[in-house]
Length: 361
Length: 138
Image 1 (cartoon, rainbow over the protein chains, first blue to last red):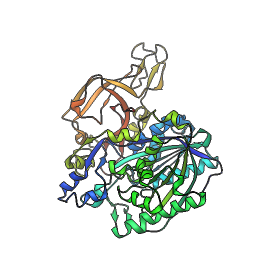
Image 2: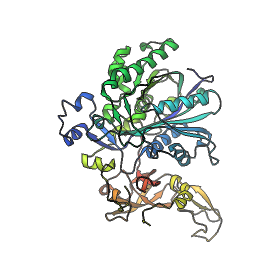
Image 3: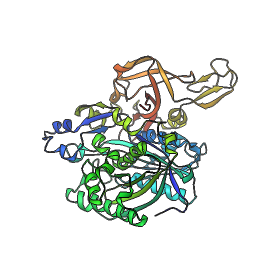
Image 4: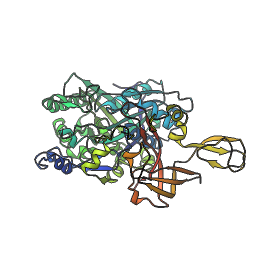
């Protein structure tokens, strides 16, 4: 898929909460053998939201960084889409809160606003919607955000990776951009690998579907088809970023597609902060943009359970040097950390219920 | 009625103040204030207009809350501080992302938005400004 008008990323921004819990501490809390269990997924530690953080506050921080980098007046942004699977409200858009907080659409608030859901690929789906709007000249600038405070049931395998973070991208005309989006390709099937019902607090996953039928099939199909459409091969890319449910899968799918570890590692952030769900591949993309040089090419392929993948071919432009250092980079957030134990983690995640009538819970 | 229940209309009326630090600017004497008041406390002029204040500042003084009012138990202990913004306006607010023992006068901070109150599982969530230590490129 290619837009009629050439578009690109005008500004990017990320945010990761400062708290961390190690997989060793998670294994200790549930009496698991860390070496046999958690170490296999190659995630040393994961980010934990603060007691007063949620998807909106994380999206706000990431979006503010993206708009600062974009050097665009928020009144010129005419679409704000938030991709997440941990909306603060089941019914009430996070996008409208973001528009209000950042004055997107200006005083008149003349902007599109919506929340997107597609498990871990809701953020990349939001990017595609903005690409379509800018590419068809309906708007000049739009904001796409992927943010989550990821859920994993206490004691479940997902608890070792489900973390918190966000990434945001202001997308606009190519001549204003720091990285041109050449094309995108999406692939979806009805695959029962992971879901969360309306009133369920935590997701359910079917381990037999997780790898082959879900993650690998969708990423390989979307990535291969995009490269076929654009006439490229893995050697044509300087970086490749895949959805990162753990530290192992992205390296495995890269090998299956013919990419090297050197192409993957700069954007492989999950081993350091865990799986930020809708933000996972987008934080990886933000980390690559933090270091990419003009002319370099990036392939990004997200994955969302249920299931689908969006693949993007991105080429970095000269303007990237002007804005690279004006806000904190992904690695600044990765390094900013305070370790918590399972008790504080439980409190921050509000897994401890306060007595009725005592107030906030 | 529980004291912690959010007054939704008053919260909604104050969104610009709580999300964007919109304060008051006296067009008569140039004094800036937060929150915005109808009459300038310096010159008594009623010519006060809304203005968005800078988001960065430093801690002037602070206190640590160990015994919170109802609705803030989850967040305790927490620091309340008077922040002097870059333009000299002073704002009273809560600090976040910092251990209370690390708070000190002169600490550089930046405004962010955080949850302030959550009214149970079905009530509204009140978000508002808080200040966290300044994050800059290392």
